[in-house]
Length: 455
Image 1 (cartoon, rainbow, N blue to C red):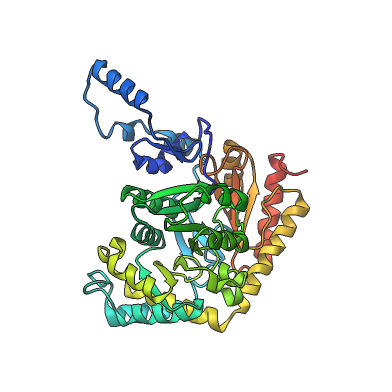
Image 2 (cartoon, rainbow, N blue to C red):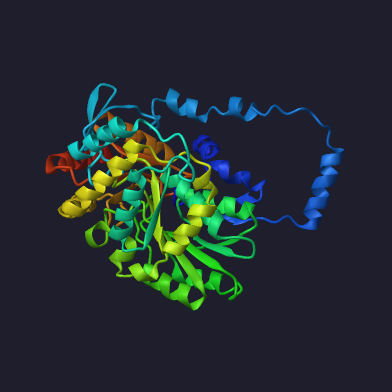
């Protein structure tokens, strides 16, 4: 999740406990400043003395689990918004708890998860190949379906080659530790997605170095990168469309800086492919910089209505990843049904680019409606529209009001977002019709007036 946090309220501590996994840095990762803290010799010495003098007592590994009750507290208040089970999914409308709910929080941007051709492709794949591959791509897990998707996706994205991974989240972990090694640097936006953060942590654990720059601020990127050795290998990694805010990276200036300081570029287009760029080809296409971006990776789980991940780039780079990436070599390959569904979704995207126009028109309609009603939003040009609430408890209350009145959105509180930016993260589909959008707006306006967010 992007836009990570600096402070935390007592209510949001339960959320922090779910997201603080990245302290696998052995306590050296400071979420407050988003930097690595290297203890001084004095601190190490003091800690050693304290440890020696302090009485020792056994610690139960699971104690933290039994002490974690924040989620239970929110559930008891009737405001818990997470892990709601969807019983039926028609795309823009789902069934939850026996009720029809308009979905305004899905990343199913082109509305293809319920498309007959996509479902039919998945069913036929199961009938032909079975339910799984029972092996990694490296050994017994490669199907002709995998090769077909890789060939077609590389061509679609204007690159020489493509490589599939089992999940989008896993893809960053397959790329970053493999390409960036001892004496080399990852240069990463502070608001990059959690999958990139995990990849950076893994690369750091394998002796690579990394630095961060302020979110989408190219002056700060240059300030950071110019301090690194010019002769060292460097990889700038960024979201193309940032998943929480919907902002688009300033790719033209990023490319200029990369060339100036001998850096390569990796773009995460999970929320960009199928949304922006020529025919939905993503961020590099949007800026006419396809040849300037070395690697682009993404996921099946948004536009491609399935589960899996991919990376596209030069054949020699993809070939290296194919033979060195642990995340690929030691994971079971994507299932036949998931790859067949993604191929069908790609075919629909290529044949019906007007779906992208409908998607953006729907999002623009909602932006205009939210602004007219007086809501504070993060403006943009993608399918994501965050509606700023500014308080944890108020965000939970508003979410419940919307849900009770037939609209499902995603609530983001601190530390998932900085204090003051607690939000309803709304997102839209090409398959939303005007009556869906009007009902979402009407429900937001009524709830906003109830809680004093709009007049």
